[in-house]
Image (cartoon, rainbow, N blue to C red; front, side, top):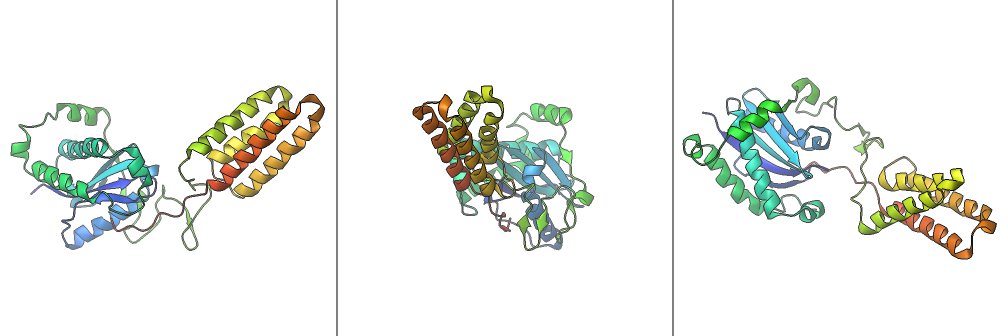
Length: 285
């Protein structure tokens, strides 16, 4: 019998489960699929926004939008159009019910567990296609899937459910450290955005002086992207700003010097405050 077995709502950036259905079966195949759920949840940021993973007797489908992914497990013969229509309904309801601020600041797993009620009701509807066909129009979803079919994740790329690293996985070193090439920074704050704009303004004012504009642009880069020795680079860049302003002492008044040095110090502080995100916990999704 073709049917939807479970569904989860997961934050893309770190794999934090926000809500999930609670009716997992305990068969060996289902337990194996739960491991695939975990593996996929850690890689959502590196995958397209619509994907399918075939795991033998079961399929895992998911869509991602606005930093949240909607994932479901169904039997292999469950129609694609119904699967992605189901996910689309979850997405619309979740976006309507919760704003991005809540999802971005959530810190506890399953903090939107009340959304499980909607997941359960929708799952029951989609597991009864006869009554469902009279309530929704699937033509738009059929056309969308035809024009932009979901990306089929090859099992060889994903690796095994026992933890083999996949071709597109994040690089983990030693005891779970994330390589700097894939490290993410914490979400930007309002003060960080202001610092970025002020640094760009200083760079624009210094553009006519050639080299002197480089340190402002470097500060912008360090504020946005993670690099090795990031804090050290930021302090060295601030020192360079001070030296350049000393060099231009006779060409600028005190207010201009104060503005450039103060902005440089403020941006350096924001770079220091915006730390890298820690490794995503191994949530039981």
